Length: 445
Image (cartoon, rainbow, N blue to C red; front, side):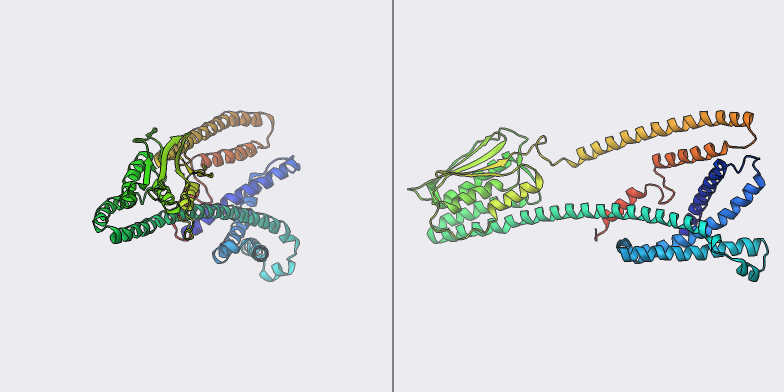
């Protein structure tokens, strides 16, 4: 029932606008040069309103039927052709019903005489107007459809990026645990006592891994401290075959990197290089030019199992989601170097949620104030100018031409106010915001 009354109000509004447009056309054609008859104007108005109400209702419900049944397929050539053809058919039926109400019911003409005298010309003007209004409806629905599609696309993009990032982070747990267990297996065979110490240290390291699981970024300071702990695990197996040069603290307390990236690079260095007492592995970690550098001497193993690609590729992909800055890899005859971008508030593309919300609120508030100023200026001009024009009309001619600027400009002021204060007669207050929230909450979007 609520939907019916909304359609009824819109039909009255559109019918009234069309009527005054027709009056304006007649005025410029000179039909009111001999005077303006208010009684005839009122008669023409209610006749026009009968047509407007019936034509609006039949076309609105036909389009509503199409939207419910076809929705996203409505704008294919086949469906659109069916839709327009249906509009023409229901409009003809609506005009026929309107004429029966006017001629047979109100003017008391016999039905047989009415049917005998009906001519196609009686339907031409009303049919053209009905089709034009229907096309406006299709344009409005197409705009709504495009907005909903954009929301859907953006949510898919955001959801895909989030899912991809979570998947990349989830790769780290089994990867780290698998490699650590391999080391533990080797130690059990070589040195059971050392294996026991390794197990205790591994539990502490793995706790850090679990703590960082749900973080997108961690401070460089945390990663440096964790790297030192992780290297202790490696030293339990390789003893003095590994030499790590690492700063005690980060030079930039605000700098952040993706979690466990430093551990993955250390692990890769051990995995792909010879590590013996005669050929010790030297790893150097330092900061330079906004990058965290991890460098090791290159002494590649002759036979290495095919890499799973989890290590470096994982780091590159996670950085690719979070920032435009790239992980840089350099390989020479002597050294292998990986440069990790240090992300800060200034250089990271990621913004804190609260800062982003505050900025958006400020921008929205500023835009709203500008719209309010524009509306109040428009309203003030209307209040000042219209009485002056009315006075001019009263002193110069008997024809009430003042109704045209009063209604035309007044309609513009009303529409301006509705836009500024967030009310749309077609979709209601804050329709777009409510629709966006609705679609963002739906699982299929």
